[in-house]
Length: 295
Image 1 (tube, helix red, strand yellow):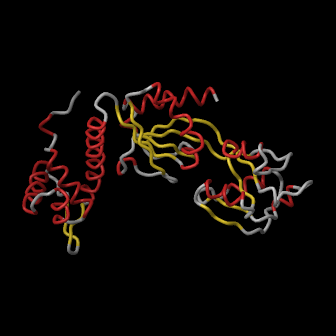
Image 2 (spheres, helix red, strand yellow):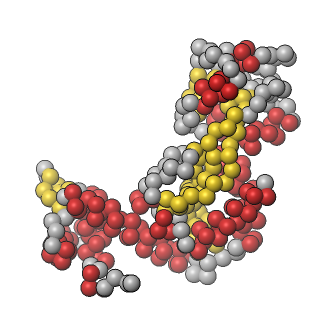
Image 3 (cartoon, rainbow, N blue to C red):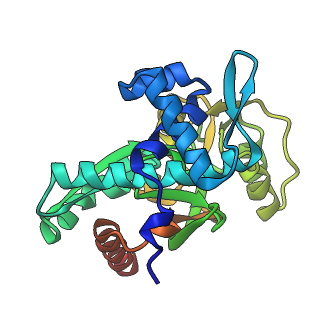
């Protein structure tokens, strides 16, 4: 059953409240919305009268949401962002739709980008906008319809499609590699550690029955940086097989012949639960499921 329209406050009141709650200032909110302070204050008063709840309270020189107001502000922010996204998408592509997607840098550059022409040929009315994110975020505060996520199916308040399990192998430059090198010798080399995967070396050591060696580790935030550092001979990196398969085959990187890949989480497409049926996202989800099943 559709909610009664008399329970829906005017959008102007809601945007004024969201701006004040986010900025902590009526003055700043008025400036952002191109309104007078008086106009914003009147909208806030009308909204509180309609709801019968105090939404804001004085805090030092500014204002902050009450506990009830903070909950309402998060919900309003998500709704306002959704309306804004829909408006921008319609203006930018009235015959199709925009898909705002957050991607992992290495996944985007090495796996997704080469395959996107196929998707755009199948869905010519859709425009894809890509931005990189290396850690989960709140969909309510970001203008994304979906994201590519690595790890487990634990994204808060989101739907998920598992794309594939990831496996990693240790790789090094030809200069560091020695014939007949043992895994224990490899473990004593300097290591490269991805910032967001703190336990992966321990997982690899355990899988091969090796006591962790006291070797220095260089921490990097992206696989692209790790790959360059490995090629420069700075150490051994545990990298996804899909990223280094061609480098190993062509001799730019080396690994031990008897090494076995180690499972390290999975890749997921995730989306806000209230946006699962957005047409551009649904088309992308269906396409991803098809191409990942085909390998």
